[in-house]
Amino acid sequence: MTSRQISIPHPLPSVGRTRLSHRSGFVYRLATGYYRLKRRFQWWRSGRTYAAVRITDSLPYRADRHSSLLIRKLGDTDPQLQVNKITNLKVAISCLDGVLIRPGETFSFCKLVGR
Image (cartoon, rainbow, N blue to C red; front, side, top):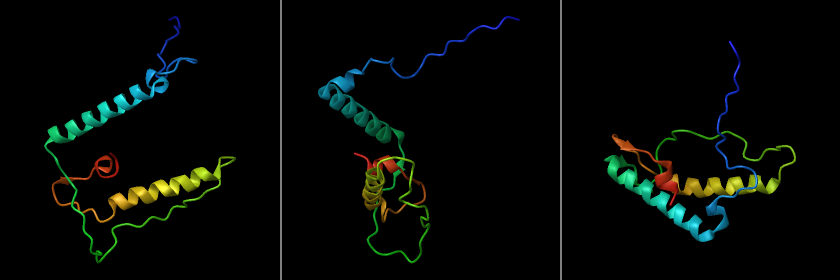
């Protein structure tokens, strides 16, 4: 048997080459709009019922509780990144808090938090 070198294409563009969407703000906005519409069409076409009802009253019990550290020392990374992470979590939680998932409904993080 002889050993052959197998060439696997790299998923990222070659060094020095930038994507068109990175060079042009218009193309970037056009591409993101396209993918958002594509995702909405897939949601609509799937026939699933997605959880969207929110309850404003306090529930009598807590389903789960978070216990991980929010601010950690991660080498020599900028601490502002940790603060930004907490801000992003607050935004996401405000979109998810009180969502009622009924039997047969699908929970979609992207549908509740994303655009």
